[in-house]
Length: 365
Ligand SMILES: NC(=O)c1ccc[n+]([C@@H]2O[C@H](COP(=O)([O-])OP(=O)(O)OC[C@H]3O[C@@H](n4cnc5c(N)ncnc54)[C@H](O)[C@@H]3O)[C@@H](O)[C@H]2O)c1
Ligand SMILES: O=C(O)C(=O)C[C@@H](O)[C@H](O)[C@H](O)COP(=O)(O)O
Ligand SMILES: [Zn+2]
Image (cartoon, rainbow, N blue to C red; front, top):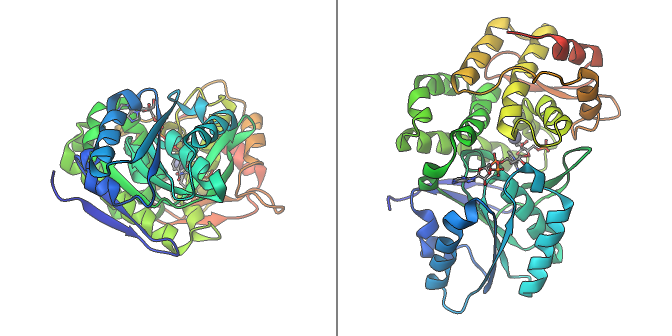
């Protein structure tokens, strides 16, 4: 195994993100994240058969006497519910988990968010180690401590901030990731460039072929640069009182699409891709940013094979109704992450609903 790249996340509860192929088999790296002698590995029914036995064996070998149990949810967003959260809590109870027990979240963002929330709630908070297995989870969801489940009324409406004890991203597992899920992860990678680093957009454009071909060096670089961006932001603003909201670029629109489709249409990354184009158009419509920047973003996302238009048949009024329950909304009305151009995002309050509807009603490029 090559030596991991480490990204530090500073703050009141600092932790490290390790990035390297082979980390899931590295018993010493896994065991270094443990305080107690009990582990619950939470995964889904696609990832568990591929990787759970390896993680459990590495942990047992590194720590004889460790009590290890597994808990598996059905793969996909439809499992990020209070019902599956309750079953995860039952699994912790069945393990007899003490306060020094640890949850290992082995999977994509769905597993990471649900397992993290279970860890946040069990005995008011036990350790959670994130073992992300999708590109999206490696670049975004495993970092920063947002944990949650969805409700039919909206995305991530029930959750907690609970930073992980550590993140270990084994980039070798991306080999089994379906192409659609790779593209979803690239949407959140593009987000970092869009919100604060236009030069990163150029890098992504230049390395698009390598990323789509899953060349390990390009992927590792994209993961490390994305984690570095996110780590800086969440260290400065862990509870989203200000700057962290920029990580929501494209999400007000994207979450509304996911909710309206009942979490069975576009996946999160795809919905965020559409949402970022709409956020750029909103900025354009409000006279904040040039149309050329919208086109640049849209072209890059399309290059990555991501959707860039609102799916046919969705009612703009219904989408707007979901946005009113967005977590950034206040008594003053809707708040959006807009941009003044590529790499220059900011929060905008009191966005008129008419401007949002105009963007949703406009079709085509
Ligand atoms: N907490 C945060 O900060 C944060 C950030 C971004 C997204 N999210 C959340 O993350 C979720 C999306 O995460 P996701 O895109 O990882 O989706 P996901 O967890 O549903 O995973 C996508 C699919 O890939 C499969 N899979 C995972 N790893 C695999 C591997 N190595 N090989 C083969 N198949 C594999 C999964 O079984 C699943 O079917 C959403 O719920 C979103 O809201 C949270
Ligand atoms: O970490 C953050 O902060 C983010 O906003 C990252 C987003 O990519 C992610 O989808 C997050 O779950 C959205 O959070 P929410 O608070 O808008 O539900
Ligand atoms: Zn997201």
